[in-house]
Amino acid sequence: MTPSEGARAGTGRELEMLDSLLALGGLVLLRDSVEWEGRSLLKALVKKSALCGEQVHILGCEVSEEEFREGFDSDINNRLVYHDFFRDPLNWSKTEEAFPGGPLGALRAMCKRTDPVPVTIALDSPSWLLLRLPCTTLCQALHAVSHQDSCPGDSSSVGKVTVLGLLHEELHGPGPVGALSSLAQTEVTLGGTMGQALAHILCRRPRQRPTDQTQWFSILPDFSLDLQEGPSVESQPYSDPHIPPVDPTTHLTFNLHLSKKEREARDSLILPFQFSSEKQQALLRPRPGQATSHIFYEPDAYDDLDQEDPDDDLDI
Image (cartoon, rainbow, N blue to C red; front, side):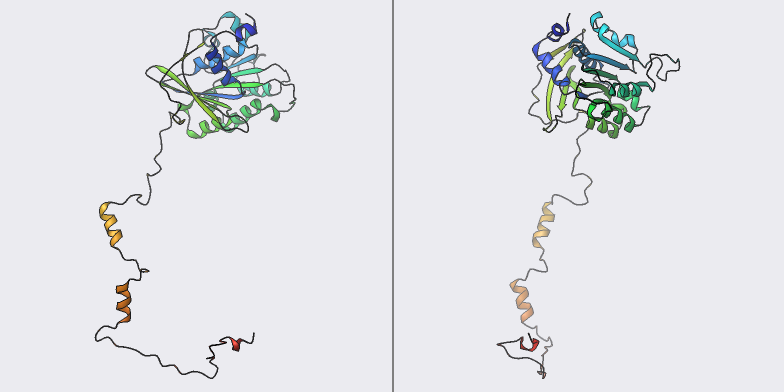
């Protein structure tokens, strides 16, 4: 099968979904959970990139090479360049084919490439690296390899680089997950209900508003997609299924609503600045037995009593 024939394989809707995930390049972050694993979708994207004639590099950290290649036919396996960091992640055996620096060294080496052929790098997985490296170190490496303009030796002939990262977000706090999410051009959050898988796809295009879509799907044994019809969720706003909603009215130091008794007490209260007629009459009419007072004023020699020009003593 030639690359062009392989790219045309599958249904149109399947290719449309896979193309939408790979079209922007950069970091494509697959966020899975215990209930909904994401390695099958990762392998489906790897197969799509290989059939399109791209160079596909696998940085395998979590599973063995045999387990990752399982399910691919010989044509796909021959197109994959597998870097095995599962058996010897620290390169204790000192093999020549191993990258110095482990998976991060491999990512940095990809950044220095000048080949015009598009490259897809499947990182399996960022969670493995986050448990062993600082989050800032991993984010800097991913940013460098997915943004060729920031890499040394960059030129206009360098092909597009797509990094596929499988993140097990339940293993990490909101800080590392949010940092990787901010780097991703395409973010896929896996969920579902009643055994039917659901993908929330969020795409961030430069100088455009982010767009999101929802797609029900299943992965076939040969790692092709079977798109399915599910409940309509397009009208619902996108929300992370793994983050519980936050009530903004909790832990307030004041009440937003008044009870009936509190409302009656508020309405019957007379404020000090409200000068009612009863209060005015009480101030103007002295009470019986109340002592009265008088003010006696004797003009001074310098007092100005001229009503026509009361400011003539200011020498203006």
